[in-house]
Image (cartoon, rainbow, N blue to C red; front, side):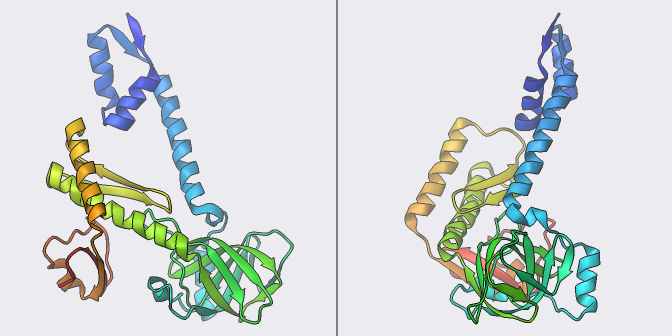
Length: 296
C-alpha cells in the first residue's frame, strides 16, 4: 500500500472539518497509510502562523501588557478606569490627562523622546477604539496641549478597564498629569467602520441563504478587508457562495443608512431581527446598530 501525505490530511481537517481518525479509516480502506507525523507538523505550522497573525494584528500592542499586578497598582494609586465613551464621536472634544506611563521596565513618571522605547500611556479618557472582537485598534497621536510632546499611537489595548495607548514618543517629554489631545486617524477609522458594517451584511446574507444553522465564530475587521468566520453543518456549494455574494453586493449598492441608538438591554433583546452573538456579554444599556430601518 501507498501513503496519504500529512499536509493533505491537515487540509481536510483545517479547511473542511474532516477529523484525522476518519481520514485514517478511509485511507486504510483504500490500502493507504496516513502520514500522521506530517499532519502534526502541519498543525504546529498553522498554530505558529495563527500566533504570529494575532501578534501582528496587535502591532506594538503585543509588546506591552498590563497584567493583574499592574492594573492592581493603578487601582491602588487611585487611577480610575479609562472613560472611552468618546470613541463613538470623532468630532468630540478629545482632550485628556495622562494618568500613567508604562514601559518594558514598569511604570515611569516621565519619558523623553529619542530612546526609541515602546511605551504605553494610560489616560483618564480616550477617543481611541481598543482592539476588540476581531476589529483592529485605532492609530493616531497624543499631542501635549502645550505643543511640547508628540506621542505616536500605533496600537490600543484594553486591560481590565484601563486603555493602554501603545507607541513611541516622537518629540519632547511626557509626564503623568500632562494634558494631551487625542488625534485619531479618522480616515482609517472610517474605512474600518465600513469593513465592520460589511461583516453584518455577510452575516445576514449567510442566514438568508443557509438558514438558522449559521453560527458566527469570529471575524477580522481592518481598514482594507473584512473576514467573517462561521460554522455550518456542511460545506457551501458554489451556487450558495454566489447567492451570498450577490446579496451582499446588493446591500452595498443600496447604500442603506446606518442608525445607532443606545437602549436598555431588555429592550434591545426584544427587537425583531436583532442578532446577538451567543455567549457574548453585553452592557446595559447597550449600543444597537441597525442597517436600513431605524432602531425602534
